[in-house]
Image (cartoon, rainbow, N blue to C red):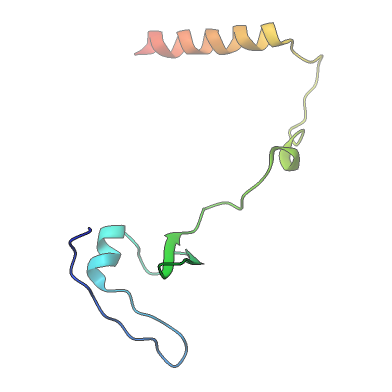
Length: 91
């Protein structure tokens, strides 16, 4: 899109900007699409907002209940390998 023509829009009295339909269609941004707005040295950058809030492992660790003794690293590795083999055999 480096050779794309320059499009012009206007900021309304409410601070709203209408994005040209060609851009909305290429990006598949429908009405109601949430965008993040980031100010950069080059201007303003719009990106689709993530569907879920960013979390850290420590925020969610231990959320799901587990009954029984913890698995060893060897048992976890064996379980992952068994599932990979099962999925590979399935096609």
